[in-house]
Length: 298
Image (tube, rainbow, N blue to C red; front, side, top):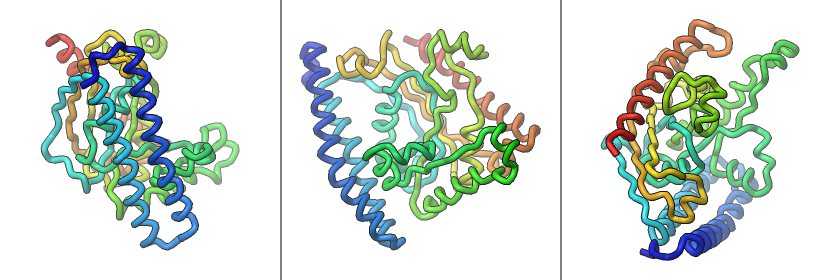
């Protein structure tokens, strides 16, 4: 509606409105987070979690409205009709920009449960955000390096055990766990540095997926394999704010998760590790071809 405004003015207004929305909704979110800490009753905490998720979803919805008001972005989405707001999903996606998160939140809004990320244990101490993440039941994980485990073999499996306990609450509350499999944002420089075997992607890192599958087991009903393609030359966060991101294609494929992928020992079983990498590599090969095809049609 206001997309005719000059880029700098659009960026300023968009950013200001998003900040106002964030501050307005963070206040009740943090207050309820403190209440959740002070009242350790399971029924009360579950009820508060639903309210907190509603606040987070409202934040996403209002941000989407702000972007629709200030920008003109055409997002062509192809997704299955079978998605359930009350389901349990592992969501994977190629990663090119921080705009990816905005796109994912928009296309999945109230079609699947609110997206959550596995976070490092140390992030719980981030002022305000750590409390908000905890209140929204983002699972925190503590991973030990191979060198550490060699020196302290008694700690083997403790990281997974801690994460499994954190994920136990998801048996009652549906969840979508998000994982950017490449581990970092794609660009041509990183493609060369990481010796990628793909044209449009970095090599997938199976460890994060293995960790999620081990922690949540057969609870996840399927994987949502998301492919995002930007058709503009530049598509970073500030490009979106300035109105330079105009055309995006999103393809979503729902894939079954093989039962054996949720039962193996990624760290201790080399054969299983190879199987998981091959499974994920096959998906990534299809994604690479899909991206090339989408780009060639423009």
